[in-house]
Length: 197
Ligand SMILES: Nc1nc2c(ncn2[C@@H]2O[C@H](COP(=O)(O)OP(=O)(O)OP(=O)(O)O)[C@@H](O)[C@H]2O)c(=O)[nH]1
Ligand SMILES: [Mg+2]
Image 1 (cartoon, rainbow, N blue to C red):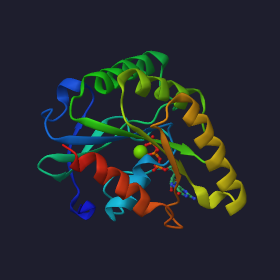
Image 2 (cartoon, helix red, strand yellow):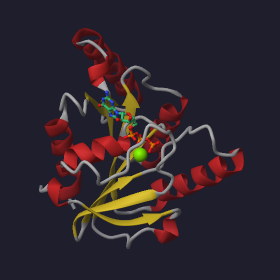
Image 3 (cartoon, rainbow, N blue to C red):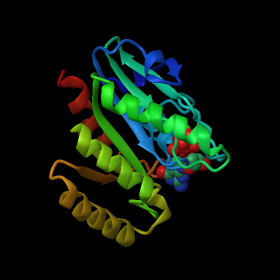
Image 4 (cartoon, rainbow, N blue to C red):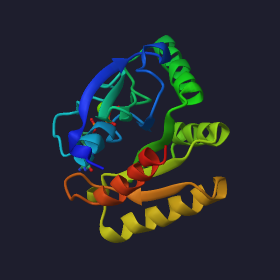
């Protein structure tokens, strides 16, 4: 698959604003600042495709990127950003659940977690959602460059073990944008999901 062909398609605040529900789509979810936008830019080799920021909560809409007419990547808003009123958070959660439950073309979920803080409450909620929705899910442990090789690998094994107790299909890998770790592994995973349909 040619990930470099990715281009911005549209933004949506809720399901009804999403592009037509056809073809195949993979969504990137995770806490604010986990590295979703950075990851999308890395796999598409486009530094400025998805907006990244040091200010958590920058991406507050679902951003759709087209690879072809029928294949898309979706940058979901980060969860847990502090400076948003509770009402707004609840509203967003409703739209996120709506999207995850009713988007037929959604073939897989990439759930990103900072390797230094994996499996936080939001992450566990998302995994529970994935299970309920029977949604294929791949966990990406980001910022692997922030840990030494040994501790990073130990975290990978520990998270894998815990995921396996939830569902045998859950997978996990390490990732680092500056070190370019895990790029091909993730691209292979995405291709598998996007090509199946
Ligand atoms: N060292 C290191 N920093 C990273 C990595 N990935 C992302 N970052 C940094 O983490 C910060 C947040 O990255 P984003 O990609 O904007 O995170 P996000 O998940 O899209 O955040 P929201 O849009 O707020 O939900 C930025 O300062 C990135 O440069 C990585 O692999 N290694
Ligand atoms: Mg972002």
